[in-house]
Image (cartoon, rainbow over all chains, first blue to last red; front, side, top):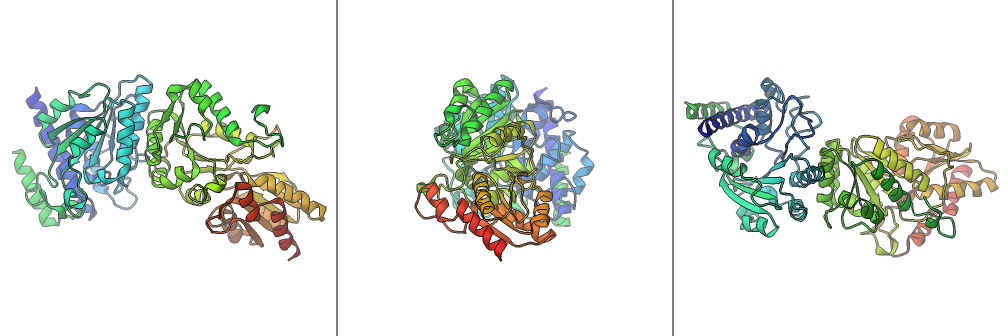
Length: 276
Length: 318
């Protein structure tokens, strides 16, 4: 059973990766590296953890997933399409004129998107708000937010982190896509984040570190939530930017480089071979 | 609004009407909430907190977070009234207002308290004289500047009734009542408080009563001044502005705000592109105010009945 789930997640994540790269290539713009580092996290959440009904995207009792790293819209849209929120064919319109699939997600137009992100450091405060609303209503639905790691340089995250701990939001989980790279450099050479786990702990959160590409480890962790009653959970997911494509992995240039036709073909071949 | 809130001079702090309306709404609708940045006292929601302790979220001194939390509460089905000193709420969290609230069409009611130069001596860091210019540039955001307790109370109810992002600018400066008991506030509708043919005085918020006093002074000089309360800055009542331009031929705007991009700017955009007529734009003239009390500053900048009267006379007498 668990093995089947893991196999299914691998297939989903692989399709998310292939779709994201194809979308970025067609659009001529995008953030391929971060799409690939987040793909396994998105697949695990959407296809094993989150409770939602894509035919009823505004159902009040749905779990909220908030994509704070909104620039990785390629992976998010591919995931939402896989999950049935809109047709997979629509991914072909990514960032084309008048497409609702803008470079950054728009909740007014796209079912399944909870709030508009793009500027960094916006997701976690909104996630704190949804988590408080659920607590007040005594409702069981939960909130998950996915942030980048460089994004944690935005102070608004730490404002929200304090509030979440103060209000004892154990129905809130933030997942940090810790791929160690931001636009121009490593996070540690830009403005260092470490010791990152200690920072979250000091802010009153329960913290776990996990391999963000290991479905089994992610499932074990997410199924244990909350890690500590009365505390919000921070999952530091150690990932690789460009994961799954040999020549993209851990390369800072692939933050927003667009694959050429040859690079796309090579990448898609690598990703297909993994699935054989 | 209880008589106890009236100062001896018959002046009222609109925050009392604001807080009273919120408590009534909260009693009737469990979705109504308040979010504050350690501003329970300055937003006058202490009574609200006593009655509905679970429905006040104090995020601490953290405005960016405050707006995001408001957007999240709205996503979770609540109707949050997010209250903070207007200078901090708008200036510190403008990007959150744009992205989390307006662009996301979140049902958040932003309440900018103690706006304009109400904080007087505390200085330009605490004055909120750019807020309307910033906010009226943002799509999807309704911007309301009530003039007195009657309009404030109705604006709060309209905000609750009307789905969508909204900003209410609530002054702490004592103002007289300018609307009759039968007044009905409507979002997007300017109200004519006095008829006149020679010039129109367009004001909102704390400046409305001063415009009315100016019209009285002008009447003594034989000049008939129309007074328009343009309490909704967005969406703008273009028809009322065009009518004023066509029927009175001259317009003076008065705002407790910089003269760049606020009420005067909004009116001028309509007038210049439809029926150009001479205008005067009164407000804070693009400077950081010197030290002085709120009342002193308003006099310093000519935002008094006499100052408005002088500007209107210049227009009428050419």
